Length: 500
Image (cartoon, rainbow, N blue to C red; front, side, top):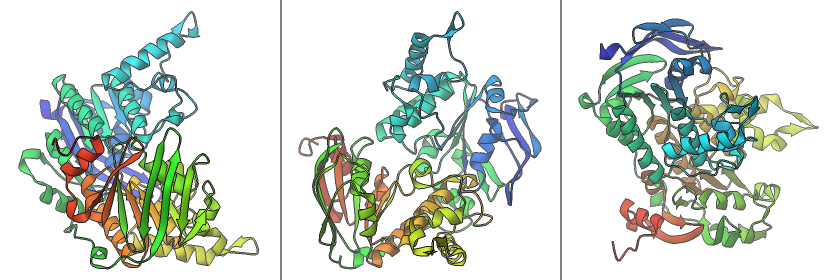
């Protein structure tokens, strides 16, 4: 029977101090796109990783075409026709795109690795997802969105019959996402089964045939997408009403100028970027992936040694390319890639929260343990971080809870200026509303905030003004009364407004 193609029966998974999955059972039809949703920490990614052989279930069984399967590792899952596109990108950064795509199945000739064949095979895999990324460049040099496309190509390249996609569009541009959607429709026509993990309701209702909701590691419901609606799903996910209200900071007057940037440039990345940011203001940065938004943020924070131009914080001109000077001036950066730039995955929640505040917590070269723990506890409670304890390793938390800790690090430092790059990437609707409320609360307290987001509804909801970047330059600036998605998209894409 079609509905018994893939079955999860009484799946239970425990981690130290956490019951990640508790007796979860549901079925997936062959050739369907089956959504798997829930709050961060609900167990969605854990289900996918058990199917893909990353984890092993403690109890229960998985049946594929009526047969019990035991994908004990990713290679075993691959032999069973199962692949996964992970939310958190996992490649070897010191290897090329081609080498990463062929890793585990390197073409050989006379016992030697066939470099030409590797390149040809990698180009063919990327062509299937409509990407022309240079296969000879290092993975570590790619943008997050490009890495995501490579990972999707890798999953499709295994010719899998079941593909788990965990937040596949979280780092993709609108055009890349659109191409992926067409690709998914083609895969379904070919009889390939997709398990689609996403927090984006519009994607779920556009792509998926059925949906399974998890909450706190337990199965809530599995039903046809035609039998539900977004409001019903949100209530099933979080068990409470979630409201996105107009930010309160918009009703307050902005304060004095805290940040001024003039003619900020970096060769090959962006040029002549100028703007101001005031106390209590939220300024949005919009633009397609590759427009230069994140690169500008990194230059302001002092990470780009080649940046030129001028920058003032609180009226004092500061040199570019010096992170320590910027930190002392009260500016913090929540980066787009939390795993590589925002957190130390081998450290625990307490240690990550205090990373930017160690100098204030130290006495005679030693960290004051009680103060550090109190600080971490305060922000974990404020951001509603779901963790067994502050001593839990950050790598074991869900992506959304990792993001909250990454944000807590800068809140603990009490920055006067905060740059947040994709603050809700991979975050569920409930946590997204919490982060929006928190950013609004910070703005009401007089903190100046620069928000970079690929989600236009998010940047429109939060911001007082929006700067639009295109091809490394500022293409326009919109005041709140001028906000509209069509207007923003035309500026981002370079479409003549008069012609439109």
